[in-house]
Length: 322
Image 1 (spheres, helix red, strand yellow):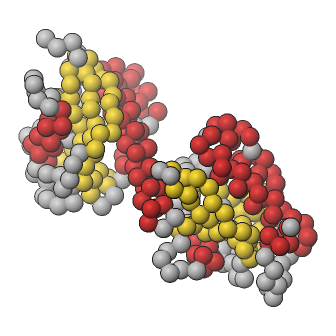
Image 2 (image 1 turned 120 degrees about the vertical axis):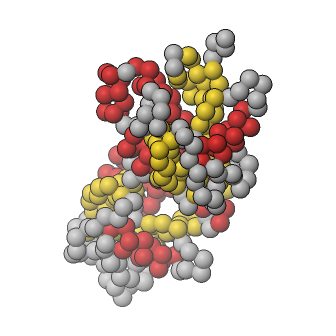
Image 3 (image 1 turned 180 degrees about the vertical axis):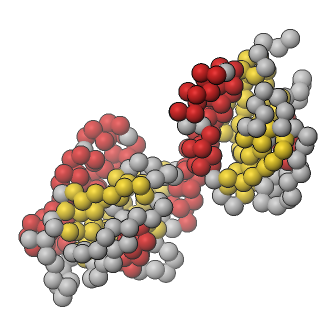
């Protein structure tokens, strides 16, 4: 008898969502998990993943499997090692096996929040440690999948466009910060901004993103500067930073953000972009240094203009701060 049982799981992707199946039998009846199952003796693990995906859902990937990671768990009293893969399944009707009673496509972040939170895991642990081991193992490679997905998104964005536009929204001597919710930069405090679309003026992109992300309308934005930093895969990310004044209006957050605050730009520089931030995320040290420079230029503009801009003055912020 094997001391460690091997199993395979598949993150089948379609339109930005993953497939989950509702168990109809076994000790986790009613739970929502990925297509998965045991690896037969002598069977290659990738073959087992493809077989389980087809047997449980009737789906066949449009391309190769990508390895996500491994997770330990205890299933039916046996130590198990589950190997997780991902693949694209853009077509095909779901055909459930007798092991499942339902299927759905779900955003992976929502799947993580709904079924694998700390409170839920603690409640399961108090009732059944074996099932808790399964849930904990699935959460382990789910987190690895979410990290992989974020990396893929950023890599595609950089290769396709590699230009974003950000806006320092100024009011009463402070700038608006938004807290990211989910995806790339989850929990990070930064400016309104986003990707510049092909053919779009970066200033227009900064105004558009500001309106979409916080509901504020900026007129006559002033350029702070254009800057870049090493991102990944040997590519540089390029940013166009702007400044615009918003004297009135309520902040209305988009679904991409969970909170907002107004903060002095130099306080933002020290609190969120200083040496302590670099120590926590050394791979983003170049980005932090550039943001600190932007904060200094914006602080100089606020000081020199007493927080009030003239809409007829087209002088750049960098010229004012030099």
